[in-house]
Image (cartoon, rainbow, N blue to C red; front, side):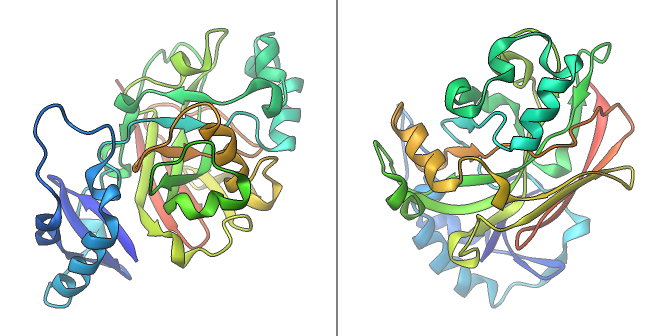
Length: 287
């Protein structure tokens, strides 16, 4: 199933080019009081929400996808975990281009040495909200990535069991300001983490290790690859991340970007696609 959030936090099931409003399915969620949980309640109760959504969707009128503002399909991730230089050709291009590496040794290191990093959850937006660029006197780049939404608590999980902890997948855009600072700073301005266009449940993507992904800017293709070229695949990344910290329902793991990263500027329109997930269009503006 494809589940989206849109407009003022409404919930929808995607049916071709239309959305069927299933906001009523949120009634199955438990009520929480302060202190709020450290996980996303919808993702933690996804099976119950999906079951209710199926029955609600049958009677819902179709709404054209293009008529709504798509939000991030995950509202409250506790963490956005990012995998740097996780495609060999991207690592090669970073090493070869000083405007990408800025002579920072960890930027040029393989992922096994560089490790993972966290992106601020305040950076999260949906495709309909667009990207508001900061520091436009510096280079701002697009990076298209497969995003993995964690479905249940994971701690010291083995790669062999990694897929058991996946709720679904989405397209992720890891927008980046180039410079010498730590990755988490340069990649965490508001709107620099785009997630969408919807969550595709794990059962619809049996092999996330073989998905075509691409991105175009103003109709010009910039990146095109396949997740088979990931250095660390989805289960290996879950093993790596969960060895350092507990992953909770709704946490997002974005798996790294292939070669072809390039600058964006206000006025650009980004079109990102991942096989079996879909396509999202994102407009770029100045902050």
